Image 1: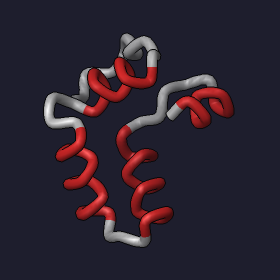
Image 2 (image 1 turned 60 degrees about the vertical axis):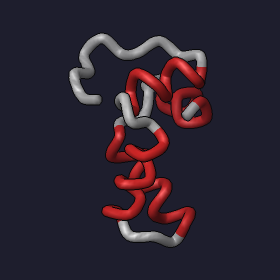
Image 3 (image 1 turned 180 degrees about the horizontal axis):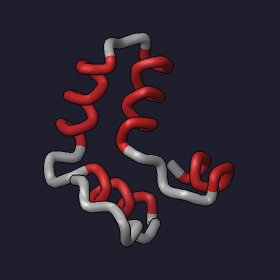
Image 4 (image 1 turned 90 degrees about the horizontal axis):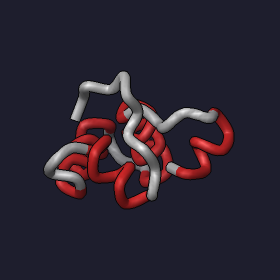
Length: 63
């Protein structure tokens, strides 16, 4: 997440994270999505940004 931010200067959207997990772990995107939301049951944006020490983007309304 931090590497993506350094390169693009924006917090990665959930779509990018799912694509990254799917390609790096060799799994289906649905499985990657299920795994992501299992890791962050209260919302990817809120929890992942907090763990990474990043500020949650203002414009995001997705979980």
